Image (cartoon, rainbow, N blue to C red; front, side, top):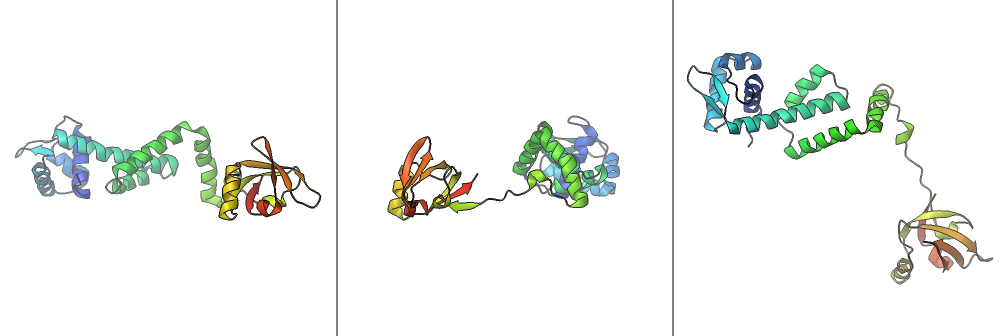
Length: 230
């Protein structure tokens, strides 16, 4: 159910002021939201029409079970967003609370669930907490990327260019279809580690080791296999 920002604020306020079973005075709602009592009355009428609240004339306000369930979900989004802004991003408490109030109306339940899982992961992973609490704060101030995040330079060459004793990981087999199918069947597939055991005097053929087995490859076959040096 989507109520819109204003009505979600009302049921959340009633929920927080009165709890799941407590009655709340109309005056207290108006004071908390900084609005006139007549404005609260209009909002309560709309909440009653949707079966979310009960308000007898001149009486206190209570949420129905349906209203409690919806209010608790809204409040859960608020707390999750607040913790993410405060604990992870380091936003000050006042700003985090205010902006969580703004954001809670637009975040889906799926995103809220993922944020909760991230916070659970964050709180249980000391390495991640240290990275955020130290390195991220330094990045905010100095713009310095920690060494752990630096991009590793990857050198790609063909298998033909490997020298005796060198090894790498196969990244691509780009030969003609018939040759490629045969090489793949031999175990020369992306992700496998390959090592050059011996090269013939004229460079052809090459004796390579893959998965513990020796294979003989021609230059024309080896030159169309791309590997990443380790």
